[in-house]
Length: 433
Image (cartoon, one colour):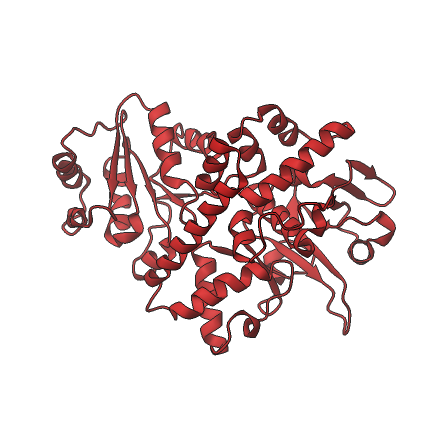
């Protein structure tokens, strides 16, 4: 697979003021594979893998003084090889299992800056609660599931990926429909590397679906690592309920029965920290930053991956397969998840939406993002411009929002007089941060 993160790793490798890099992201999104693939292709020397979950006895390396010389000397003994700074890559995997190893990254930077060090882990926020991360001594990079263009390349459709990654333009009817058919497949397969690999090998959606079952089980088993922070049964309930609530405002009481509001909130927040789900709060498009007006009470959520969301929502993999309009699948929730996931992959680390605060008002716009310094409202909708009441209301109320985007199954089009751009769903990722 060709991952976008590889180019970011290459950029890090060549920085003059390079620091140890920590890769963050949910479990099973491909962090380990990406680093090993990058190391094999871009280093003259060896890639030294230190898996701290597989070898818990190696944690003792970080128990004593954290001088780089001593740690490297002991690592060389354990790995039975020399570690050559400037030539090799030291990869510390599952670093969240050893908080002292996270602290040690500072000393690699200060005492051996020529050494390339990458660490990766999930649940890092839990590990770092008990330690002090040294600001300015490490760098961070987030890894997400494969986005739509990556999925196309992984399934052998490089030309289609080039079209989707290029600036939006109106495509022929044949190309347009072909790309929409690929979006439908991506909605069912998702972007988790293992499910994409299974589908790419056999061409069968069912094989990807089997991986989703395995991934969901693995995530639930991981919940034991969250304790004693939160109730495991509540986590399991919230995990499944959020998948069924994509596109709707979240109410804690609806996510898990039999648990108190604080318990449910704690479960939801921890799943956000683990990047299993992403909180999408309402905000005002009156000015930047959007986070300054983000609501703590009104919010929606999307899942880490659309294939996992499809499985957890209980929807059969062939459900609504006859639907020509992708926005009709699962009452539009799949399309909103798809757009949100593409926006997140395009660099929008924080997503927001707009809901009119007037009493009894139902006006709502699906997403607010910042593109080229401008706040842009995004509506995932199949209707014509005349029926985009919420989007038109937002743009009339907030004239600083000069361009609105409508994501649908319709071909690319522009309406300059209305300040609207109509993008096919497959172009969602071109709205880069």
